[in-house]
Image 1: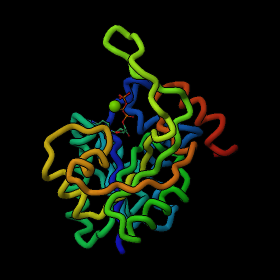
Image 2: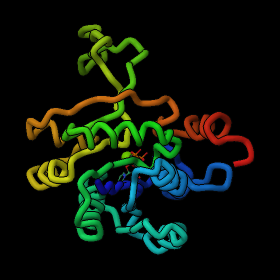
Image 3: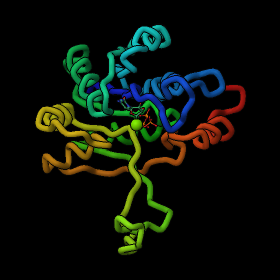
Length: 227
Ligand code: CTP
Ligand code: MG
């Protein structure tokens, strides 16, 4: 089966505040985007990668990935959903025989290859939609608009969701065709179709680099010495 990965990388990285789009921020000399793409291809399961780059940085991103023959770059959109939609259109054009599609945030640049493989395996085994998840470790409370606690949520059934999220191509295509909405993750759109979404174990290293603290963790813990 042929697997194509979409990499939304068109965000501005406002919360990181690095002054450049987050995907282009280097960790020990290699950008988050380059690391994310390398991780997908190193899994040995992904044949093509389609990156959604910031619209004003498409040439720069193309140059950065020029050595990676199987990487394609398109301009992303205003919201993550727009970026994924554009990457999906390009993926269907360049890899028309793809049967599995992954969607993987450039910001999750340190995701272990084993997570990529587990997601692909589960889709190839017949699951239409698969997401990597971790148990929630903090106690979670619901509050009202004043900040007063309404209730303590039972966290045993809560999961924090990571990427790559994997889908049978026709399922993700249908989810994007039938929804004009903004969603924070792609499985959310698939759930609205009534399609079951399966979970596989995620990994702490697949954390999303969002803030300067996360970047410091990546630099000191996740990027092996010398990298
Ligand atoms: N993303 C995208 N297109 C957008 C917005 C986000 O492709 N219009 C991508 C980001 O590049 C990132 C992933 O979606 O890889 C997750 O988004 P997030 O972590 O929120 O990144 P940013 O939007 O860049 O960060 P911020 O919200 O702090 O600006
Ligand atoms: Mg964002």
